[in-house]
Structures are given as structure tokens and as C-alpha cells.
Amino acid sequence: MSAEKMHVEHCKGVNGLDKVILREIRGCSAEVYLYGGQVTSWKNEHGEELLFLSSKTTFKPPKAIRGGIPICFPQFGNNGSLEQHGFARNRFWSVDLDPPPFPSNTSHRAFVDLILRPSEEDVKIWPHRYECRLRVALGPGGDLMLTSRIRNTNTDGKSFTFTFAYHTYFFVTDISEVRVEGLETLDYLDNLKSKERFTEQGDAITFESEVDKVYLSTPTKIAILDHERKRTFVLRKDGLPDAVVWNPWDKKAKAMPDFGDDEYKHMLCVEAACVEKPITLKPGEEWRGRQELSAVPSSYCSGQLDPRRVFCSG
Ligand code: BG6
Image (cartoon, rainbow, N blue to C red; front, side, top):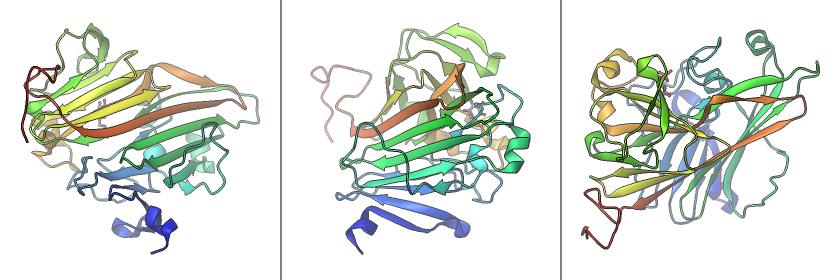
């Protein structure tokens, strides 16, 4: 295999769908389907999968792939007239061979640039022209970086407004042993209570029933602690003020045909998003958003934030 192909390999995935495999020298990898512009796999240097992908997902367009990192654009959820989470997740994206340069040049070699432009059919649903770019990059240490750039290319002088999310499905060992830190005391909209606004308690968030919340104006760093596996995911974001936290729990899991009845125990969605205050772009304007994920061994357990206070072996 050539050095370039080692880092970026274009091949066929499930059902002959085009996919791109990114690899880094120490063995970590990521997979991206052109269908949906969707990351479906992210593995660390030990080959351990870090994202959840449902065993029931069919990889059959026009159904979105259940798991990985679907892109919600131009609408998050049902906050608008479009289909749930917009249509970017069930469109075929293209490889962007000549993307406009990034201001901060990265030295990463394992990356791919994708682009979604509207088809004539899409324009009938959402009457706008745009370029929706996505760069997926795998850092040498295994970090997974997603950068989106959305440009209004309307020629009729019209602005457009959208909401957005990186609908990230983390793989967790046991949801009842997971805590999320960084969202304490924040306001959130509860999708299970007609989007009513509440304020979160002061403790880290834990899970014992269905959760579907949009935390507003969150810090740029959120930690997801998988206590069982002694692994912490760190999510960093930019340009995406909100964070969605979702787990369907048992009842909703059973009602979803593309999701196993017990799979809710092994996933948690924490999604860098822009939901509360939609983004408006005038013709020629571009928006940029970013989500960066890393997975590190937890240096603490049993809810102790100070590693000097508790020592966990193994
Ligand atoms: C979450 C939403 O982001 O996605 C939930 O907050 C929704 O309300 C979930 O149920 C899954 O959506 P979908 O369309 O992929 O089943």
C-alpha cells in the first residue's frame, strides 16, 4: 500500500456504498461514508471502536445510517418545516478535491474533504443554493476532528437560516455507569416536555431513563466518562454553542426499527449543535463549526474529579 493510501483509502463499504478509511501511523482509524457525509467508525490505536453503530442499521438509502456521526443540516430535530434533522444525512456527498484553504494549516495526513450541494429536487424542498463542506481529519494521536463550512451561494440575493448538529453516537460500556461533565447548572430545553426550558442541577449528569435535552450556550469542552471502561471522551467544539444529549432508553429503543432493543445501554449521543439561535447567512457569507473528539484513559473513578484523591488501578 502506498503511503498516501495508507492514510486515506477510498473503497466500497456495506451495500457497495462509497467510503473513505482514514488511518494514522499508530493504528487508529476512522471511516466516512459519502452517503450522509457520515463518520461510521472511529477506532483507537488498539483497534477498539469508540462510536456506536446500530447492528440493525441497514445502510439502505434513503434511510439515514443509525450511529456514528450523522450531520443534521439544514435543520436540527423537528424545529422547522423540513424532515427530522434535515436532509444532509440522507444525501450522497462528493469528495471535494479542491477545497478552499483552511486558514490554520494542519499537518495531518489522514483527512478527507467532502461537499454537499443541493440537487434541483433539494431546491424544491429548501429553496436555497449552498456549499456544505465537511473535513474529517484524524490526528496522529487519534483525535477525530470534524470541521464544517457552509456558504450561501444564492444568486437571488436571499439569506438563509439553518440549525445544525454533529449527532455523535458514543459507544459506552454501560449507560448506567456513564457521567457527563460540563453541562451542570446550565439551562436546557427538554424535548420530552414540549421543549420547555429548565435549569440543570449542580451534579454531573447520569442516566437512568430516557433523556432528550438541548443544553444552551455550553462551555466548549464536555467530558463523557465511561466508568466501566475507565475511558473519558473529551468533546471540544467551536461555533456550536449548544449541546444535545440523547438516549432513547428501553421503550423508544423498541419502537425504532433500526435500533436493537438493548442497544440503548451501549450508546449515548452528545452532539455539538446550534439549535436555539439559528444561523443566518447572506449570499457570499460562510459559517464555520467544529467538533473535536479525543478518548483518553480516565485517571479517576467513583465521581472523584481530583486524581490525587482516588487511585484506580488498571
Ligand atoms: C436527537 C433528538 O438528536 O435525535 C431526538 O434530540 C431524536 O429527539 C434523536 O429522537 C434521533 O432522531 P432520529 O431522527 O435519528 O431517529
